[in-house]
Length: 259
Ligand SMILES: Nc1ncnc2c1ncn2[C@@H]1O[C@H](COP(=O)(O)OP(=O)(O)OP(=O)(O)O)[C@@H](O)[C@H]1O
Image (cartoon, rainbow, N blue to C red; front, side, top):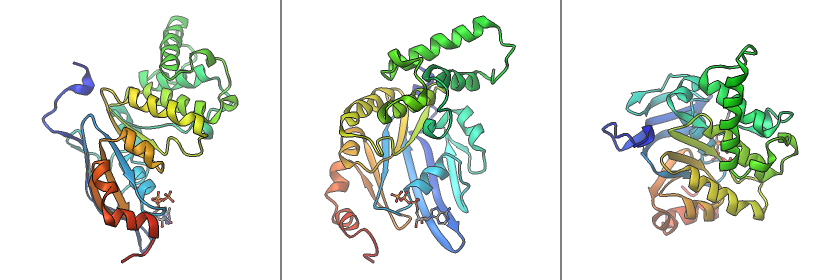
């Protein structure tokens, strides 16, 4: 049994209770309760402006809630910094496109491995520890289908392959819970199938929380779906349940202000 499958006595690895985020007077997320089941792939969906990204940023500790409580593995992480929750195993996908574009695919994964192993940028690290990291980095690149692109600059990878590289760098941190923000956004049709398959593979033995606009991907991948609207939970259930819900259909068709 791996660390990820260990039963710590609760079915829910990540929870939010009364999670609220106000920007000035406006509640982007209002009194949201979420329970993410250990080992599940859980989607947050909803029309534009529903509060998905704000929820995601709250759960990954990029934002601090105005009120409410977030727990991870039974521990209150409401005020814990993102770097500290990452060390505990709650990791959001890296945005390669925004950062190490001039580094090779291998170097990007190696930096992530170094941060995990706490060796950071220590230039005096013995050569053998670097080659050990290179081996691990190559394994991770193989795992995401980038084995033959280790020496390509991140900037030169196709859009879909950049997303795969982001997943490799996220996996380098050996997350128990992996949070992906719109992993298929902007992708060409040809990249959708491989990335869906990759997420399915990497979800084995861990929990995945995903914000995703593409509903057919949500239908294929996700065990549980929370639908947000106007910053609140509209409903939650399996894809079959939520897609048959009149309120969800109306929210998606109308977009805004049905109430
Ligand atoms: N930093 C901010 N300051 C002020 N308002 C914000 C801020 N971030 C988000 N909002 C507002 O909060 C609401 C929810 O935004 P959020 O980005 O969370 O929605 P979303 O569901 O991710 O939308 P989309 O699908 O369009 O990405 C929106 O009305 C947005 O304008």
